[in-house]
Image 1: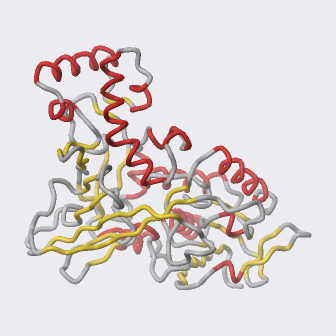
Image 2: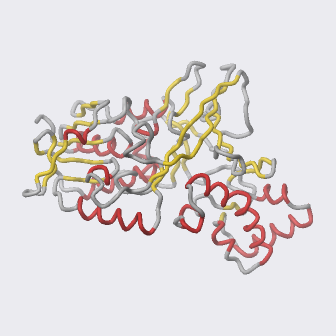
Amino acid sequence: MDYDYVVIGAGLSGGILARKLAEEKNKKILIIERRDHIAGNMYDYDDRYGVKVQRYGPHVFHTKEEKAYQFLTQYCEPVPYRTRCEAVIDGISTPSPFNFKTIDQFYDKEQAGRLKELMVSYYGAREEVTVVEMLECREPDIKAYAQFLFEKDYKLYTAKQWGLSPSEIDPSVLKRVPIVLSYRDTYFSDRYEFMPKEGFVGFYKNLIHHPNITVLLGTDALEHLSVDEEKKQVLFDGNLAGIIYTGAVDELFRYQYGVLPYRSLDFKFQSYKTENFQNAAIVAYPQEAGYTRVTEYTKMPEQKDLGWTTVAYEYPAVYDRRADMGKEPYYPVLTDESQRMYGQYRELAGKYKNLILCGRLADFKYYNMDQCVLRALEVYENMEVF
């Protein structure tokens, strides 16, 4: 075989490892992707109205880490951008993450002033806190406010998104969207936040543009893999190569320990002959039946003078890998049982000396994109080059 490594999955993790091995180790790389496009869930394109949309939901590069920023900007021209989101509660559109404006909207002026002062006094110089912390707060007014937000937003959104009650979900899920102790109205507080000028596909093309890298789309790599149990090697078309696997690890091992649970998403795209559909790029609807949020893509990034805007309604969905081949697994459902099962798969994978797991699905973790970058760079730095 003409390749030193086969990378399974043309997403961010696979692209980073392919580029590093091709450029720094002069290795020949074959990237295989089941779907008909590169860039994984970052994939974007121009729709019939000229609006650049993202097929698999909104993405933006944001990070506090200089290392991640420096790596990403080698392959794109960064356009500064700040994500702004809102959530509709009892018919009122309020900033998300919730901030002091939220308090002003749901309390009278005197009550709001007291609550804001109390929160600043209680939490000191902190910029944000989690709803989990506030629910455990000893101050009854803070706890009551947290309970209000939990009942009106976190609880309802979590139930729709995950199909589980909050008590069944890993607490890290509820901590992902904090409560801001100021009037800051941006979704992220990271030092760097930007969109690639040529879009995410443009970025990805630059990432994998190297003479040592070949891409094969529309191909199920699992049909080409086999296992040599005696030598503890994973073979590609009967040949030995380094295998970098970024897909779902239970699928790789034919579900022998069970099926790892994921949630999927369905998107309903609608275009409207208007320049503005909603107040912010992303608006959450915890109290609506069915969908969880609406993304307006002419705001991600700002796209002017098109005469149209395109939005996507996002519907959480049950995912069964063996039955729903048309859907994609998005979010690992992190429970004690699922993480125990994943540990078994991880231990099994470690027995094959030429197999490397990396990425959101292979690691059974929900990564932001900068976390994905840092994880791939860490894997590269620690791997024994095949």
